[in-house]
Length: 492
Image (cartoon, rainbow, N blue to C red; front, side, top):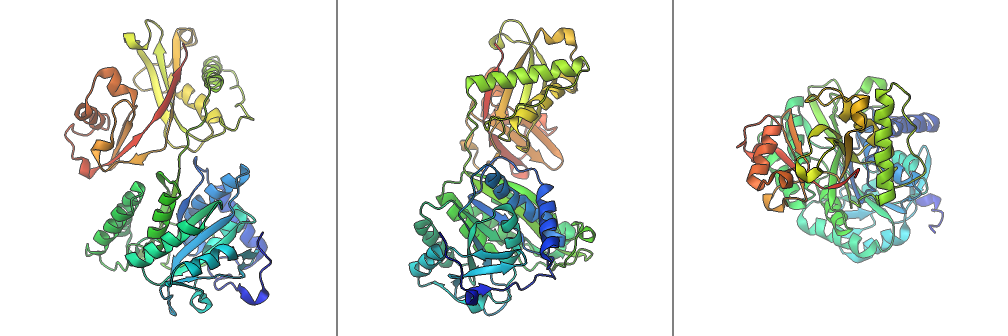
């Protein structure tokens, strides 16, 4: 239980009314609207990266990060504490780490209390960590996250941290202190950071794509290397690859230490493409300026597959068949199953149709296969939708007829999140499906395909490229390659 903070230790808002609405009702409506516009993916974050510019520019992207916390809160799994880490943006600079260790931070929506026990334990953990209120005066990066936190996870405490340096000693000191003192708290680590600053839009998008590609790996060393390469590339007007590089490094390390094994890019935009005219408030970077700032939302979490017991599998198969039958007979689709939390889990799925006869291992003819990769709809909702698409929209086949449905066997593949692959030795035939992206081209093969066809890894990769419309020997260094696993079940 966190004590009521002393009024003398409440940090007052510095940019309310300028970078975001100062009126509480206007602010609540805006933040709620931004959160309501987002469909969360599956996963409770252990680490987040969220931008901190004016809501007119970065608000929609920040909402994609905080919607993940809101979804966990709605499921009855609220967070105890959010550790929000940012880099100093102006003097006085932290030397090298300043934790606001008592009281709270105020916004127009009220005061967010500090988890004083954790904050003071961090100060005691290293000579590099101090409680320096003066360093926090006027800084915006932590403050910009708080209204989202207040609306997404009411009651969550904070530990606000500023970093004045990003060297490895500083990063490691804060990472180790956090991992040693988080205890049994349900915690999320949030790096408050925008991406590249002030190049032209095309150059910004290219630079941020390199940074986000590295972030997808979840590997701090690869992220550090990618940002260095961006900053050494001679991009005109580039000031930094990300203003919170130290906080990002800490967040990656701590999230991994807490068990994160999966990373997803939740959203990306720039100040030039944000719909600033629709939202109140100001921002750095200037929406109409040819020199822009990039904004990304990233989540790190530990993936746990849905518990699809045989009865749940049969329920999904029955729902898929019923949806196809209703569509082909021009009847209303049966309502989605509700009440089962495992079937309410968002997941990517493929539905495959086989013409009955001989069984899967006897070359049962394919009759359709369609998938939906993003894990942004509940299984109970997306499986019937994709089943209808597999029956009617696969361009390789005419639409299934109602009479054919009796002779068709349904198979469902529930997909894990995508994981970026750097080392091809990580790919296991029979376990991993593959997705390749190169420019506008994309190709996917399910895990069972190479097993069914007797492919080795080289053949698997060549056919993946062919599926994407690429040459079979396409250089994989010029593409993004991902693995995923699948839970596959079918009608008998």
